Image 1: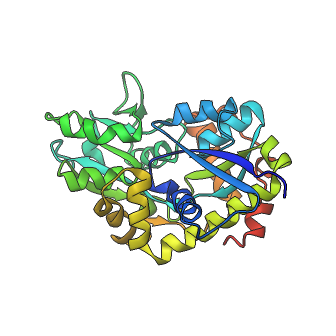
Image 2 (image 1 turned 120 degrees about the horizontal axis):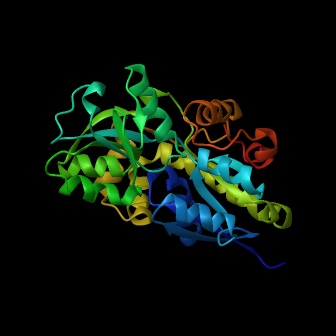
Length: 310
């Protein structure tokens, strides 16, 4: 048998990437024995270092924000979308010390987001603009966005005693972590702003798709299966997630069991219409993306189809 193909996948320690952790766990425990795939995972603290690693080929694949993945494709055409890693899964948390009751109460405050090229930017901007509030960076804006790595948000919230930060929108489990630590309260779930919205994608570098399609297929098959497993076995998934994401099991358990559909992992077939909606808003209205991309060229749906993704 030929040598297995090593695929190093970059990710963040968020529940949006839990299906990758379940796949890694299955392989480590011998529940799955891939014939072609040698899986390696690498956790990154923030989105920019992960984006750079993908572009420079330091990782072969990445679980990454949809708008950021599309922007990288626009720049170099070297990585392709093969699967969604989840749907929904983010939350707006209001700072308990900032006296926030309505969306208008965020006026004059700073809101933390994980990246400008994110669904989080789009969703919060939508809520604010519906109330006639402007958002951005610099003077003259009603609400100021500040980009912070997701893992740094809990500490910022803990030490913001004066309530300068109105709150944040980020992937779980950092929202649940802040709520359980007593520094914030849920303001809205992302699924209630846009039901079943996409957020993170699995993208694979083009040369890996060409050279090792069997390994990529095994990876996608396993991740689709892992998504179904998370959906059907939240308690076991929380145990795996706690280890993979470096969190208390109770925090992951809250994400997976409190409020149905907070995070959805059992429909991972990429929806290109939704991605087109995102890139339309991000290029024309928010102006965070450089330009639209050809989604049919960006996406290779054959792997997801072969895996039976819904």
